[in-house]
Amino acid sequence: LPAAAARLPQSVLTAAFAAVAALTAAGMLRPGRAATGSGAGGARAVKAAGTGAGLGALTGLLGVGGGFLAVPALVTVVAFEMQAAVGTSLLVISANSLASLATRGATTAGIDWTVIGPFTGAAVLGAWDGKRLAARVTGTLLQRTFAVVLLVVAALMLIDALT
Image (cartoon, rainbow, N blue to C red; front, side, top):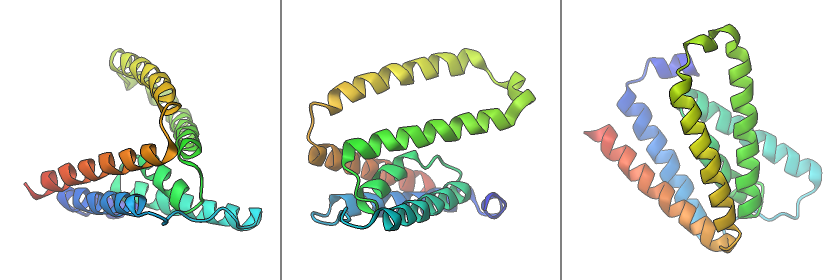
């Protein structure tokens, strides 16, 4: 899929991502649209694997991290509670990031650690603050807030793609 993405104009990829993000956010805003968690463990695992494969394909095609699309997918397809979806998404992002870093191997010498270090440190501190705030917010409010932020991001990306 990265080869296909390389042949598409950046504006098309950005618009496609904005459309996916907007549809995902709209699905999260619709009441009663979350999947039910009553399925058997095996069926849930198959749904999770299929959803992960779809997110991976989108990530490969659009060239963006799928972490913030993983949260809505875990909520709506796999029927995770919002807080569990956020934590699971962060675990998946961490595993993907470590795997990517490991595969880079010797090429890490070209990485600007003076930028990455502070960025990572600030992100970790922000995650701790976010966890503390999330504990004070209901899952429904967190889900709606996430969806609204995702809609704003989609709108800004679409504007960027069209200008």
